[in-house]
Image 1 (cartoon, helix red, strand yellow):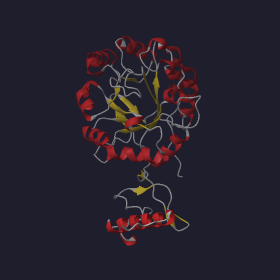
Image 2 (cartoon, rainbow, N blue to C red):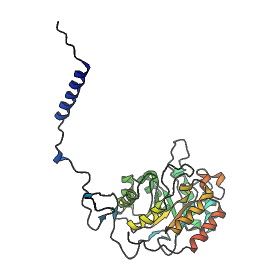
Image 3 (cartoon, rainbow, N blue to C red):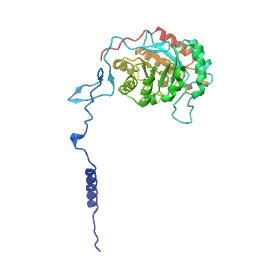
Image 4 (spheres, rainbow, N blue to C red):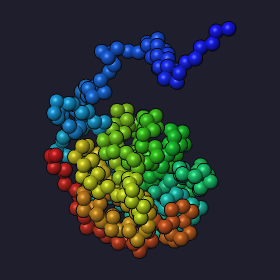
Length: 329
């Protein structure tokens, strides 16, 4: 019987040769057949890519699309509220609808808010956390709308959620986790109702603006961008509020841009200062969590401001003039 002794080095060479032969047999494309990742596709008619053109001979395309500048910025009508109008808007309410929502909404309406948060579907990091009351809260929404006359904005997780809410709400909210749920964005574009699109906590500004195009390409231009803080190395705050995003996004698109200081701060005592900073940066409005008794809130109580603090924001919003058109970059 023949026996062969192969040294370790020969074994490695044979293995590499076998991998190479298998790789070639798999139909590896030749260089000319591979699409070059740095060559951007041509933008659709009436739109052009934001950001860099050619720098040092390399074209770097970005995800965002910049719409042709117009003299007037777009205003979005949500019920009887105009976002992007003569002054910033203030939308407030508990993190999610609770059994006592009617009384809470009446108190918030008495404080002078322009619209109400009305979320009955609540995506949470852990499945054991409160997920919202769901469809059983529909009668609460109907009663609040009847008694306050204020527009209601409710987060949806799917097209089915949006269809179930129907005329009970005046606008849909797409949360940070669903910013790039493209099928949901397209479905909301088809429905035509106003959409508040929150920025994902790890999304760039260009990805955020590009996500809005999924709604707009379906014929629905009633989109409101919402900056709510991004995830950074900082752990003192729940997220890091990117004030610069207000200025940059207003320069990239004609859509209104509002700010949610509650999810950025994570603590109610920091919310008013961040809200004022957002107004100073030119935000078209605020989306704030507020509760008559934050300690009893079913979710996110630590970041919900009191009615007293809310009244201070109402006054600040009414004294703030409408943002001016963003300057050319």
